[in-house]
Image (cartoon, rainbow, N blue to C red; front, top):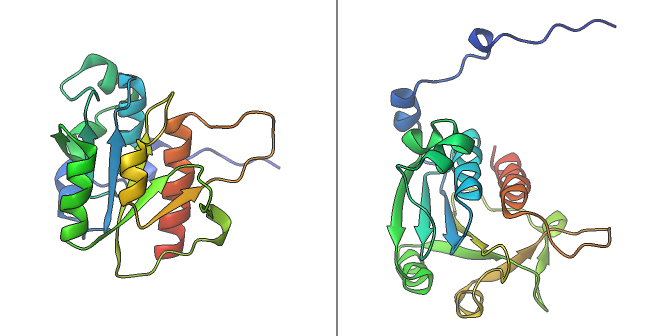
Length: 177
């Protein structure tokens, strides 16, 4: 069976200006001390794809403008709102105060398996993704409403943070559509 790939002009993508006018999704990404600018760029690109309202870059995260971020973001750093916060823990306090459900994407004793999590429409979620080596800071995990874990079946104990962002955002947006 032959199936023709769509051309970019056939994808009916919105412009950056139109993107910024879309309704809020209620989703923000919080990057907790992500070391790699390429992972930060991937977070922007995935955030754009699933219409995250904002990417919070905390601690040591690289910030735009950055050639490394742009290389993997492909310009999504211009469409998705972003802000830097020195402290992830203090940001979590602020987001909680304004009604976000705080979700650490982390393997914990009581983490909720992703396949068992169905987000509630109308709720706002702050999805926290941690450092490539040490994960989400324990203080931040302690302040979270719950931890969300991606079930895995192989020998490795983690996924690259950019992959985790894609898996989690797809799942959440799918259930919120």
